[in-house]
Image (tube, rainbow, N blue to C red; front, side, top):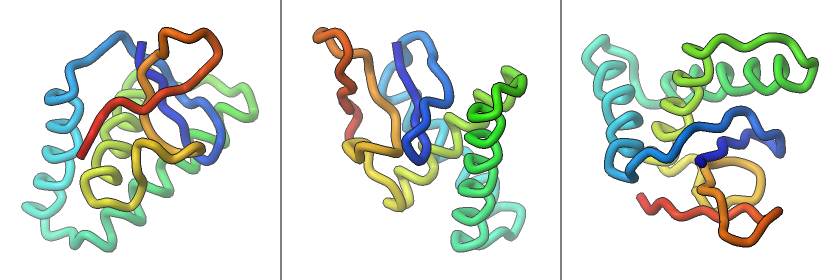
Length: 110
């Protein structure tokens, strides 16, 4: 399993996805933004705001659509590729389920 975290809150969990595919999610999102004329600074702001909103919905136990979970994963991977967050950060990032129960472990590298 892969768990996504934003500002100390677990947002989503996904079945295992290969590292190369995850990195591709972020790259695709960044590329599409640039093709539409959205600069990197604006992209970072949009991805962060979306993740803040997702976290708020999760904290308030409001429903979250599957498409929002997927886009949240893409936003996290884009922020990793842009070196805004790092996978080994204790509050933000994407973590694979550790073999040791109860521990989070970042295993992706950018």
